[in-house]
Image (cartoon, rainbow, N blue to C red; front, side, top):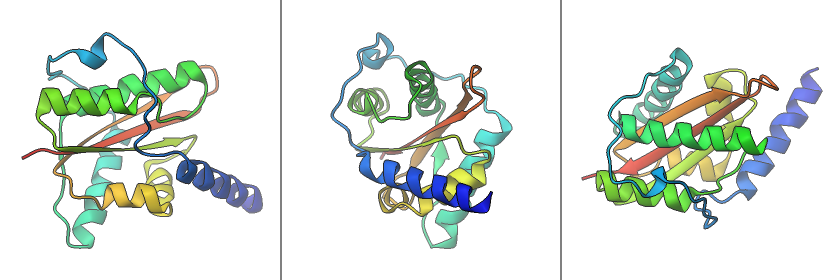
Length: 168
């Protein structure tokens, strides 16, 4: 069991590392170009736990904690549903999400971490911290972030999208 879990973690780390966090693949949706700020987002306990774990880690290494923004979490949620529809984790449409966050919130830079099929926030954050590209986002020069964790009803697998932004 532990060997299979280790193999799965290694495979996911390789997949995450190979997927660029600044993919230039685009996804066209009506909301991706909207300039309306989404102000309402209801956080699940596992989402709040993930944000806390990231902030606790940042503080432990001398970085500023990040402030959550509902609009960023909403954009993260849209991407989770996209990945569930596609039945695969991806950074598809990242440029559109980043452009929306820059336009609507005035962000200077945007980064994104995704995770797939981790049973807990701690296991997802651990995987990100063990991936150089995803760890760089967690440790990046950001001021704000958002999160969404959604379950594929057909498979029971969880999809995580965590978006970071630097907003002056």
